[in-house]
Image (tube, rainbow over all chains, first blue to last red; front, side, top):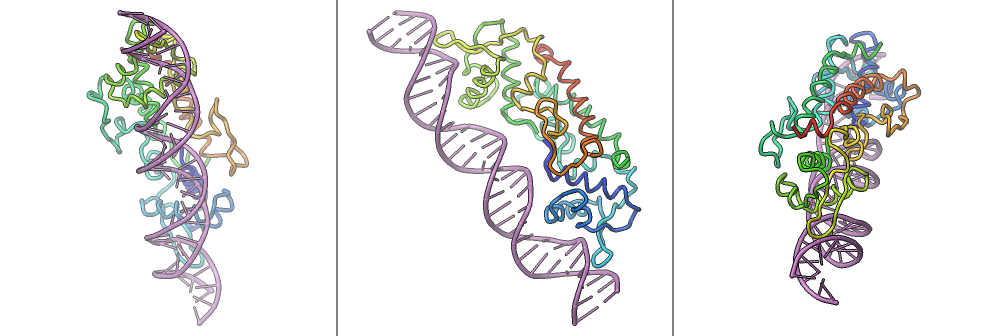
Amino acid sequence: MLSKKTKYGIKALTYLAKQETHVPVRIATISESENISLKFLETILLSLRKNGLLGSKKGKGGGYYLLKDPKDIPMTEVMRVLEGPIAMIPCVSLNFYEKCQDCPDENACAVNKIMLKVRDNTLEIFRNTTLADLSN
Amino acid sequence: MLSKKTKYGIKALTYLAKQETHVPVRIATISESENISLKFLETILLSLRKNGLLGSKKGKGGGYYLLKDPKDIPMTEVMRVLEGPIAMIPCVSLNFYEKCQDCPDENACAVNKIMLKVRDNTLEIFRNTTLADLSN
DNA sequence: ACTTTATCCTACTAAACCTATAGGGTAATT
DNA sequence: AATTACCCTATAGGTTTAGTAGGATAAAGT
């Protein structure tokens, strides 16, 4: 299941993708438009900035803005920053790999086998979808 | 992320799929073979039985067994019993649908749009994969 | 009948994670 | 100097997860 954090993060990013590039948008504006708790959204946008997806500007006329063109931001990047692994199980994750404790041989594991298939498919979708696609 | 319950459940079902049909296998046997805590596995198999996937037999020579031919058990069924929804977000789930609080119009929601795509793809894989496929 | 085997069932707990919220600090603009 | 708006850490409350405990029940063998 997607966390609320990820869901709200995607909505906020999509909102920003619809704006003029590099024009800061206030947290409060996004919060009101997308019905997201202001304080919660604040922490989400902060983490998106720290992870290189957003830039920010303080003071009057300030806010958050996308650092790149929406069509150059694939959902893989968004998902990994907000949600973490895309795979359903760590033993099949590219960026967050972990070995299973109970599994002597991954290649012989039924769970590994099917979840690898699912990951490949999901990855393909996220790779080929950008923020620009979502904002249309 | 898959819960351990689901992971262990799939492993147990796959184990049973490799056995002679309708020959009961003891929990302890599966537990040892798959490195799963016996007591935890007990509750998992119990829920699989209550949800119509397994049959059981008590006493000596007892254990759990599959009720259907492995090739007639698609992963959609397994996943829904063990993990619940296949979709990553309730507003896109077939069997566990829930409306989003914050979303005035689902069709205009970016999150909905992409997660629907992911669900369709994942569903397709789970529909076309049976326990028999996993046990080979 | 009695013993052994093995599932059945409920309840409980410790830890982890999620969803925020609080409360002030910092920087830019007017 | 005042206002605006992001910056940052900590924390609280709720939910979920991953197991554990402890006995009840039923079937089979002797």
